[in-house]
Image (cartoon, rainbow, N blue to C red; front, side, top):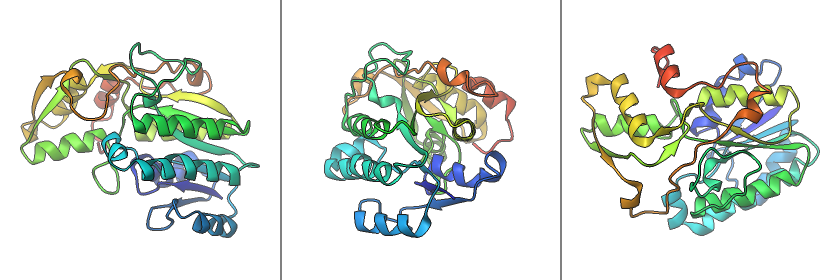
Length: 280
């Protein structure tokens, strides 16, 4: 059995929903927050005893930087302590931890796996600490990914869903021209991870889109996909943002993982063009 935490979120739900396609040999059991409170460590121990997993894919996290800043204790408990506990329980089996590009400070971009990390907000700090706990075990794997898009169970987890909701509500989005990411469809992230698991890969990998795009450009691409919404957007600068520090350039070099995959990681703009009917 493969256990997927965070099954109510974007990436976790794709692991469960597409397992028949990408992991037909695994019986996949998704855990949502209502199924198991990962901050209740006694309950985690009991669930582990009952489930007896042979693989864990850990997606659950407090992932919004603003929420992490407002609830630092919860962010540390869920993102660091719960991850460390699961990794300890999974000491003898494969364990995959979904991390983030926000472990970097964003001053340079085009980061490779061996580059030094330097998180600039609490969310990045907690994920960096969790990475360290996971990578202590040579059987385990950390996946750093970027903006993931798709359709989540709650309809508000993907960056595309946030934009869609704003435009349905006739709101204008201010999008930064000087903040860069490598957006990727969640279904592609999931496909890549399943291939790595199938090939018994371990260690640290960057899995992101093959295109460095500004938030502004990403918004323009999404607006072109939904002209019926009459999307409203205006350019802004990351330096004007008043919330938690935002790293300006978190583009990732994915050459290492690309050598392990049977398919090319897509450019986001091209994927949108070649998948016009994909729910997004």
